[in-house]
Image 1 (spheres, helix red, strand yellow):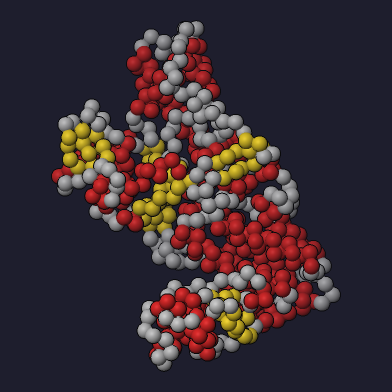
Image 2: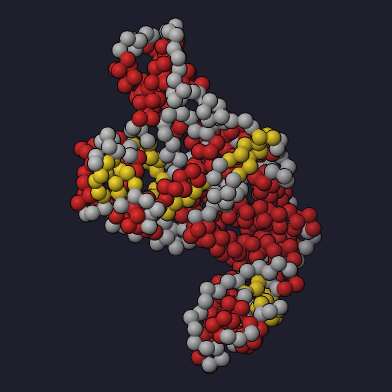
Length: 553
């Protein structure tokens, strides 16, 4: 409906320009929104106020001309009013509303999908945590955010690949091997002063026990070869655990890409030499610097240290060239908010590689404050005491975990209360939405038992759906595809939980005021069709979130 009203406004403005009723100007982006007050109509637009500056005229006078030149050839408007300083309020005819539900009936599980992506190839890289320890709750939020961004883009016609970048090269891996080695020696009875910079968590001790049980004292004497083996063993074990935990959370990657691949055949060195030959890298002493200031960064960045070791930035340059060489048109990285300062240098790198700045998009994910009944759960990363994905998913379940991680904009801090996430009440957002779907399924079953099967659109009288709550349901259902499209364009998956919580609220309000199955067979069929459509939308939205839509609760 919004699109139809926008076209009416665009047509009217074109007509006003042709007649000289408006001064020549570019037609602005036209917004049509739900008004805050129901008495102000079904939709409202502030386009007259936006035009006021270019027209140098009062918005109300502009609004009057626009309204006078609207050509409602489809006869969808009951009336139009001009309110306040120049808002244009639209009132839609009652018999028009339920017609909007026909698309839901036709498309079913595909309702909400679009082809705005036109098959453009997109890579979404997310999580990418070092394989030096289990994933904690902060990683979980990034995992769900990246996964749902990928799902939304797929539903919008993009060709999407999910990728996890394994940081399995560099000093942190050697440190992992040393950490396990020292704990292993402790098991041998040796008096070890465990270094502060080593990994502290219980999982290190568990790995040492595992190795000792399998190999005994085999690695006690030769430290160098022991650390080399233990590094590989620990990394593989931890990565397998990471994959299992992500799968439990419903996150499946198309590819795990090893950082080691970048260094094969001196790959990183050759890329840096290529960029140096193009003037993007310069040398000071033994240090190589990338001229990121040429692309707006606040200072140049080191790519090779004076000891000859490449930096993480050097590997990231090579990794992103690898991404584009695989044919991706867009690359989206989902990072923790602590990587904010890294964005400008990566935009500089992709431009030096010959890509446009917008070919790389960064989504930042803020920290999670874990609570239990409103009280913070103590965590200490330094001491290795943190809450893992496995612990959270095991306690509250996949559905509650995923839904709660998406309840706020990703770049906003999130409070996650474990006890609330388990509550079976309207205070728990995911329960509230799932219960709406289960309630709809229950009504449909009871109706079927009474001989009232779920009707198709062509079998109902849409003109009977005139109650305010019915109209609100239809309006929200109609905006679902638009909401998904907006979410895909903005890379904002939190819009979906906001939307379905509103939809569930309106449905519960409708259910509490109106009887679906009644003695009026025609009204019964119309209302059954309405709630069936509502259930379809809730189910489609939950599927994008990776959350189940139960039929019984």
